Image 1 (cartoon, rainbow, N blue to C red):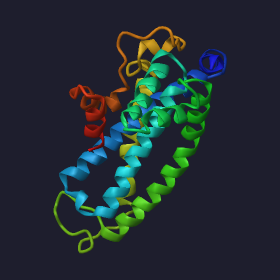
Image 2: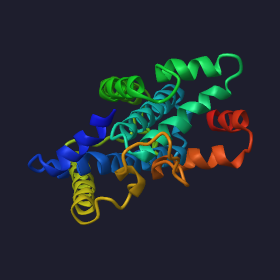
Image 3: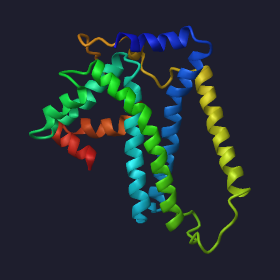
Length: 238
């Protein structure tokens, strides 16, 4: 576990342009979630949940991406990484009868430690491949049912070619997001990070404020709004 924190320091300080790769990866997650939340918001606004298969695969995709981001946040092994992993995995202990055993099974021991870190690293690497497969399934369902649009016109009755109309539009959107990411990385790379994560993980020193990354704050607010642990977990699931 000690080498996890040191490896990130080595990448940032000793590897040529390692710092920019690290910050592109870390802040890229935030840009990804911005696009994801905009996509979900659009789907809610235009009633895309009426297409149940497409919507359900999309919900599974959202959970898979959140799991990938959470596991990635644990890997640098800073204070917020360690305590975030401890708090979030401990939520499963609210499950009656099997909760405690389930948490220890995920940890691979009696606390968040080397076994947990190794497992999270493996899943952080593997989940993107599963997400890619789910995206293909999501698109297959989308092509079967079509998608809603601002005009309300059924998509199968009024079509235009994908190229050049949507390719140009998508390329412009991608360019704007890439430029925004580069601006963030080059001018304020730590804007969305937590200062405590630059301190190596210490199980004996609990930070005064344990809070997740901004893209998990909606889930954090639901959990904190109910004083009972099981009630908070149930509210989050619902």
